[in-house]
Image (spheres, rainbow, N blue to C red):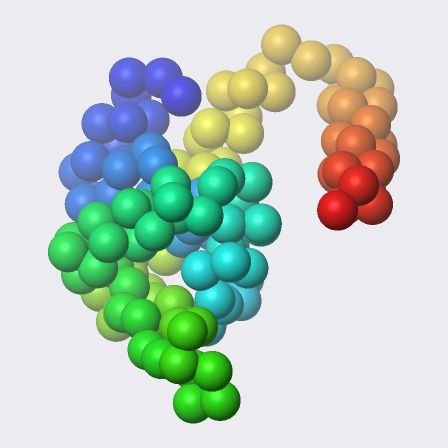
Length: 125
């Protein structure tokens, strides 16, 4: 991510490392740490550190699972929900920057290949 993207995120109180977690939680709030780690593609210890920082920054809360005290569910705070539109705008800017050098046909091919790649990675687990 470029300097401008990092600065834009910083202005709204989000770091580049928190961006993928927020994007996943915007789609499905209340996931466990393990589910988030899988969705974002990072190791559990890294996710635990990221979530601690996000709690500190007032972006998420963690609540214990009623049926399994070892698990906790991560939920967006009201403050994080208020940032959603700004975060999504920045994500769109990132996408536009990354894809700007590809033709429409190349973008279509890239999307198809990315879907295949993600599907294959999911089958390896």
